[in-house]
Image (cartoon, rainbow, N blue to C red):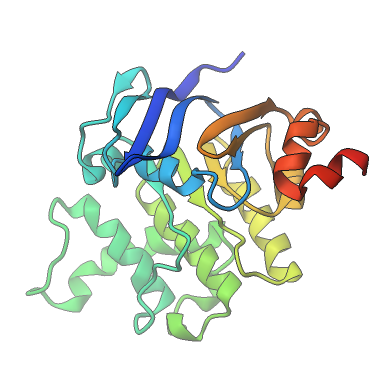
Length: 252
């Protein structure tokens, strides 16, 4: 059985008396692709923000590799290997695809950015950047301006920049949101490919994506864990069906 690499214990977040996340106990096994699903407003993205300390928890603990990390700054959590993406595309549109990955790789230099050095001082990062682009099938787009990429390719580029931070655990927040069928299929295959040797926790609305990718699924509703298990288990759960589709789902 795999080891637990990421865990929450009684994780709770309250906003002015409203409980957005309510005593969530979550265990993500090392090497798994684990989905966090639920209807709109279930608290999924809030959990992501708590895991990476973009929001402080009201109560409870977040443990990564057995270490309590709830009070660490987001950048320090990322340096430990717990790296997240966001729902909104976060790439530099006026830079080339290669340059976007190179920016992420500058962390290796010891200083984040070299504004006062010649641009060619970063050329030694090109080989590594191209290797990352190959992993997400963007090598042929390396010199293209990022703003000109189709939306699905931009999300693939985000995967490459996430990989540049050498994650042990990748937190992917709705990686297929807003995509057409062809882009969804491409990104699913890319996630499957880059997940080899890593752990992935993903928020995802597309249940076909979840069923094809994920080893384990945690269902949230109103900030609490409603069900957990493999896809067959949670999809057959009448409480899950009701949460997604209403009471009429009981008769489907």
